[in-house]
Image 1 (tube, rainbow, N blue to C red):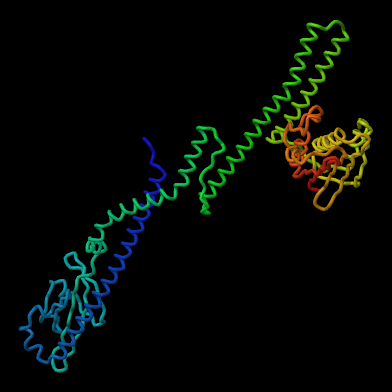
Image 2: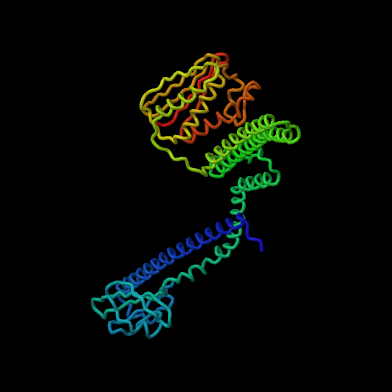
Length: 451
């Protein structure tokens, strides 16, 4: 059995709550009306008794013609009036029964309640003092106010409209709910279309209403945009990795085939093995770098940070690279002493090696690579400058992309993973990396991490 839709459920809840509110308001109104009705009855009873007592007191001949009085004269609205002599004997009026006669008189001018034959009444007495004659008692009796249910039944016409009002409330709630849920339907249709087509370039229609649903649509669109970028980068990464691995694999297979079929002596076999070893090393470096990227992006391996003397770390790295510096390039150090930061020593050494390796690889022959390290209260800044050919403005935005190399002259000198790895390591330490480059003058890479 299909469950009720969210629109129907919200409409039913809205109708139920509205019905409960209407019922409570109706009960409250009936209770207020009942209380007001009873107060009016008590006031009418008191007034009728006082008026009759005043009439008897003013009429000196009341006792002479009281037998001639008609019963209608003792009915004031719903109030029945009864007259007794001072001994409690009936004189005139409309009598309800023995229960009324047996009730003691009270001169406190207070309204009392009594029950006769299962029905409640209000009763009030007033004594009439006659100067030269017997005293009288006037007693008034009126049915007590109606019960709450009786009050509701007395207004049955509005109650008969209640089902119609409930139906209108349901239809109105369903219409309002449909309008409120329209953005959710758009989100559902768009996400389903994306699921079926796989087209992440589609976006949810988003009206700038400033409410929660507008924010939800905007956030989902931002998520799709990020997913589209990530999938594109992943496809590009996979394609580039496959391309980079294809070359050494092809060389290895070709060398193995040549060695098996054409090698004439041990020297030639050693040359084949050396070529295979070189390509195997290239593949190993590529795979290790790719694994490092994956571990850092997915946090599958935690690289512990510790307070590290970056001055000493950088001096050691410069000393190692100075031993293998090509084409007469000199490394000049401009390092402050005692610069420390909370970093992972192995990762930061890898960052230094990549920056220095790039500077030496692309530096000018007989040129100079300048390495500086400065510390402020907030940051530690590392700069590596070379005087090489620089980077063209059209290549500059892409140098942080994996496997990107600016020109063919550099394509044979690296894997295109060094600078992306530098940025990844800097981000892992909560830092940033930037570059300033002028074609024909050189490049300066700047890494900043929290002190």
